[in-house]
Amino acid sequence: DAGVTQSPTHLIKTRGQQVTLRCSPKSGHDTVSWYQQALGQGPQFIFQYYEEEERQRGNFPDRFSGHQFPNYSSELNVNALLLGDSALYLCASSLESRWASYNEQFFGPGTRLTVL
Amino acid sequence: QKEVEQNSGPLSVPEGAIASLNCTYSDRVSQSFFWYRQYSGKSPELIMSIYSNGDKEDGRFTAQLNKASQYVSLLIRDSQPSDSATYLCAVKSDRGSTLGRLYFGRGTQLTVWP
Image (cartoon, each protein chain N blue to C red):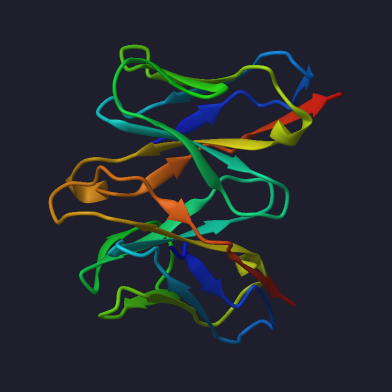
């Protein structure tokens, strides 16, 4: 049973560029949440996708956008990269319902983004 | 603004001792609580979840929840050097406008020395 997978593992970009990160959830899960973890900090919630729609969004600018595909995989896009976007980007998968959120979230290995 | 606070650490204990990690949260209506372990350079790994007041044991790990005090803790018995990691406390929102998102503390770094 494959766990949560993310690609790429590492990425180096320059300021102003755009980046796309990818995530495939754990088998049987239908919901993907994205988190940003800066060095020495806990993960910060970016947004969550359920039924191919953005269900929740954290306090991140519109430069951060996402998508969920019919097979439940997801992408995170960041435009106009800033130095401060350098972080570990984590994808977490879970099995949710439209009206309740009671299940555990399991993280993928993450993508380390460095913006120069 | 939901806040999750963890004891700042770092925490250092000898092998075989009990490590105690603490966490408080600000949102009184939170219902789901989690402990994640994160090794340096790796992603968080779920080690415990707890939803009801009281204790929940899993091997050497015991999670304790007190909703009245808005407090959750993790005890690690017979600590091993392999337990050395950062432990993240997470609280899950269970209501409408913030449904499904996890709020994390900054983590407590634990070192178990032989």
